Image (cartoon, rainbow, N blue to C red; front, side, top):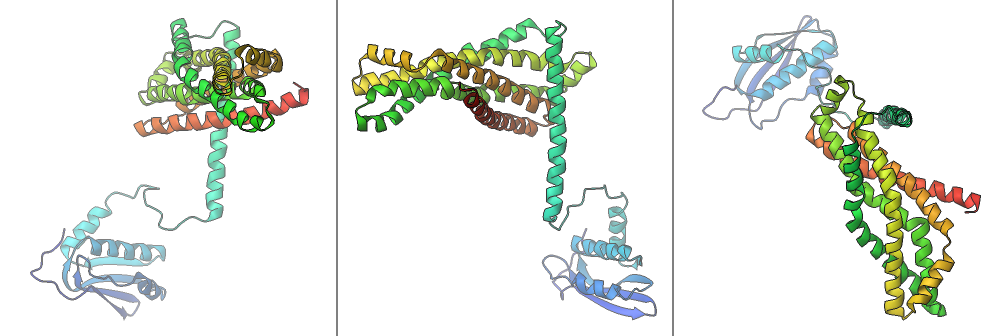
Length: 381
């Protein structure tokens, strides 16, 4: 609400006058638009003399808008902080009505934006508390998954067999095209990388060793795990996140059905079973990609390439890759379901949960690969 004036007047003015133990603040001039306002810092210094009360007075206001209201509210805050009474009966009636309307409802705690930037120590403390809360939530979810697995072993877990078959199909057969393409290209890349150095010694036949060993021990399982994290893990997070938004998970709890048993367990079983099988398929596709390079570009005999691969990579290397694949499948399923179950109640939260699921799964896969590689090295495998 603002008074209309035919023409612009002098800039906003605030006159201070001391009368005994009272401080008179007289408003004058034009308090509209882009006119510069008086400094609150000088007013704070004047309040430092600790008057008994502050009187706000109209001394020739030519026009005003919400800027005057905000200025008056800040004066009130300064007075309240120092325990000084503030009176506004001598302001225009329109200003008084809007001030009463602005202060009719108490301010909601935490609604005011903090103008100052928190200190580094404060930010570190907030980050540590947030990390602690998330860690506790993660541990709670891991515990629920563990108890769900124990109920499965006792035959007491409740989920539909049709859901398990559907997840097996989505995580298995439906993933074959992308696994075929990526694994074949990874084998081609490994072959080219090895050939660059092996050609210097005339040892192109050892391309078979490099490709087969790399695919069997690490690349087959890792690439499959990362593909499933971006494809299936993200889908799990989006599905469970959407159910969280629609309160379907709350409905399951209301009906006495454990959400971890009904939603998480079939997805976990599906990935734990399918990722090792996809890894075997990825290993074969990678070796085939290496053979295409070795036989097609470096004129290696196909039978010799096959014999070199079989002699260079015993089955123990494929076994280590399958163990890693088993761990990666569990990681992808747990990461996707964890972020989905922790999703907020908005559409934006579903996207954030999907992103967090992919990032978490990939990071955990790399960490698990490093740990298992060290363990296998210590065991001499």
